[in-house]
Length: 150
Image (cartoon, rainbow, N blue to C red; front, side, top):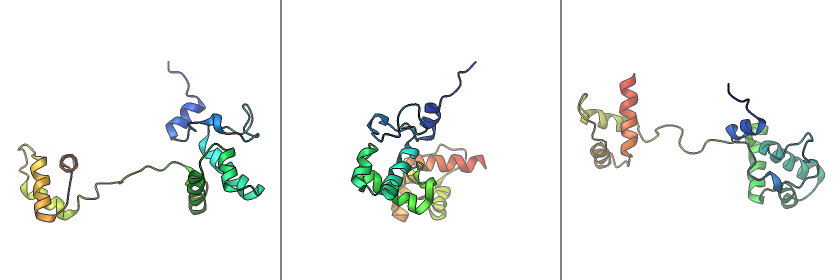
């Protein structure tokens, strides 16, 4: 029987666990109260609200909530752009194989013999020579594997 997940476990899984909750000095974030210093989204929202509604400076608000000024400005920008959803963590990096354009895939497919071993390094070199595009060999291996699954 598995143990039930705690709020801290769920915050960690969601990427919203405040790494340094002990730095939050706002009096309304006392243990056992409504506000939870472990919840980074709540901490950021309250930091923004405190600066806007209560008239403290951005630096004071950031310090009171245990965050840096750059974090304040990033949160402010994200909140103005996307609302509360902007305070949620965003995945970083490319979302897809953006270098593997149809033109690149055509070069790979024209040199790859189905059934034979894939020489990804050689394919990457050919793509670079023919198109001037740097593609990692592992990206080529993944693309060919995806194509085989279809």
